[in-house]
Image 1 (cartoon, rainbow, N blue to C red):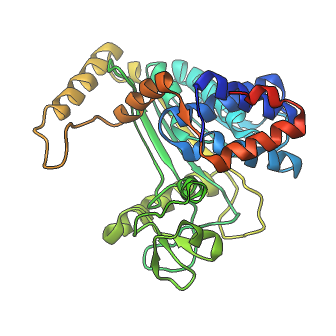
Image 2: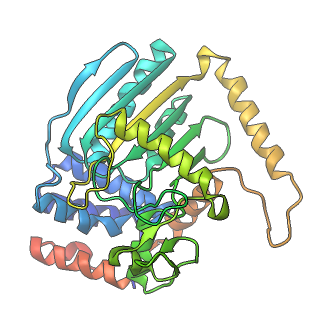
Image 3: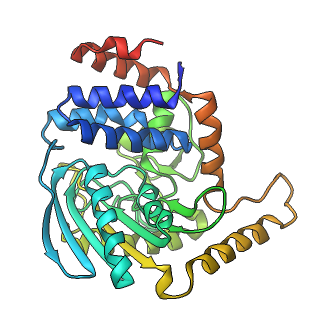
Length: 349
């Protein structure tokens, strides 16, 4: 159970991706986003997925060097076919282009289809926030294997369908919300399986439709619940809207097809603050708003009120110093790939 510094882990991930056929640029982008997820405390989207991405490369489900194809475009909108390239690479480029369009057009939006997993959705709207703009992104896997039941149902019909909104501010860390519209992100179940841990009740139903704390239940015919517990109709409704934006608007469609290829369809929107009010005034007021929230007396069992995104910022600072814990099951997979590609020296501790 090693603990590894972020820069070393980033280099390990990039080396393995290059061994599987990724270019230097692709490997650098994917590893940066992946280890960034570990640093933020979202291990479900971190280095644990590198073996999955390599498996998808080997099966032809991810195509290194895939062309970035703009299929429809206006001064304020873009539609991109990623041609099964790395979702990190495609979405990072598209968000950068959407930000540039918002600089001149005040508001810009984009959709992308036929790309692989984009990882932690927050990474892309935060690019807009860093540029002094509001960023929004939603994601869905189109007509592929689905794992979330509609509220009141017991068979999967929806994806985990994440949504993120990020705001510029003068806070120490970014102000954003990034969440699955399911009770939990699917990757957290994979982490629980890898660590031999149980999960809270309210996340999953087993194959018989009964609540379970066994994280392996999903792969054994179970299904995930929508966000909200007894008020799950709220998460369900939000998930439906995300699916329309990211699945139907992009042209991916909808439906549960277990044999379908993982296909992250995404909707992005960027709003230039300066089109609405002076940027610094906005940033200052968002900062004051966060401080106002944090000034609330704490409820029993809480030591501090955090603004949205603050915990990820604090975890990143902490783990940059302490290193990132890697469970044995994941480390063994990385070692196996390193041996296959003849780069075992990269994993020496």
